[in-house]
Image (cartoon, rainbow, N blue to C red; front, side, top):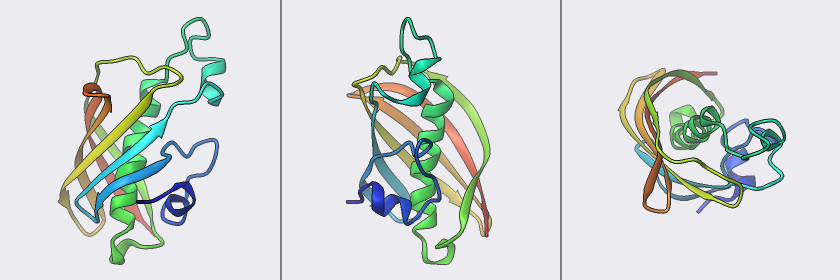
Length: 141
């Protein structure tokens, strides 16, 4: 549905911090499914457990937030704005994420206000939950 170039037209993130590779489903302002291809050459693998390369949990949460930001910032009233992290609740990490893995990032926005959004986010490895949390966004100009 959206590739990296199209994603970069919506959110301001750039390499090395753009953590989503494609959007495969989206209901603007409501729900999004994104994909992250975890590559061996990712910058964080050089220092995050080099003996057992594991994607940092905080970056999995950030990837979920970026996916949610695409859904929010695709809304007509929020185009051209920035979605900042407003909070994270109840983050749970269930599976390690390694180079070569493909993360499916699903975010369902359940409450939207004029300057904030709230959603439930789940990162999957296949059919297994790698991470789940609640995320909050603050929408700036």
